[in-house]
Amino acid sequence: MARKPRRLSEEDRDLWERVTAQATPLHPARPKHQTPEVNTRPVAKPKPAPRAETAPLPAFRVGQHAKPGLPGHDLLPPVAERVADAPLRMDRKRFQRMKRGKMDPDARIDLHGMTAAVAHPALIRFVLGAHASGHRLVLVITGKGRTDRGSDGPMPVRQGMLRHSVPQWLAMPPLGPMVLQVTEAHRSHGGGGAYYVYLRKPPGGGLR
Image (cartoon, helix red, strand yellow):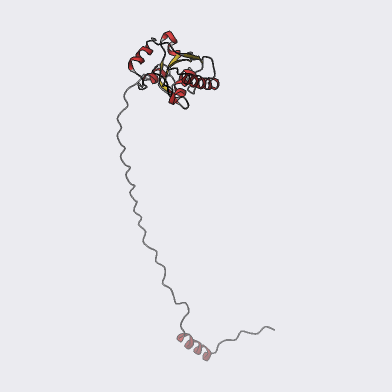
């Protein structure tokens, strides 16, 4: 059987009101939140920076500045220029006689048609032997090399490999200390396809 709810008497109600009046609330009433004022005025957008004025392009035709044809490929100046620009180390009068073909070579070697792997050691043997024999002027025939342009491609291709390589080989060890002068031969001895090589005097050599 359910119990009936007990009602407070007047004395109990008066006691409860006196207790609650003296008690300190754990959560005092908080002030109501105030919504900050919002500026509803539209914000002005920044003005774009002014564009720099560019000078108008002059009138032109397509290809008007293009150079006709393709430039030749070459890693170094022509070999004739490099040999001719070499400093003079021998007697000038003897050099002029040699250039005019007035001096006969003491010995000669023909490298024409050889590969670099064969021609380089052959040249070393020849020059070492000529110097040991006391020769002063020797002739090295290289040939002018191919002049056709059929092998043109994206990579530079040196024409006349031996013609370009021999002056460099003559300046390198072991031949460099023995060589006094190198110049292109007179046409009577092969012209641009051959070189005069004037050697230094061997130790104990004569006045030749």
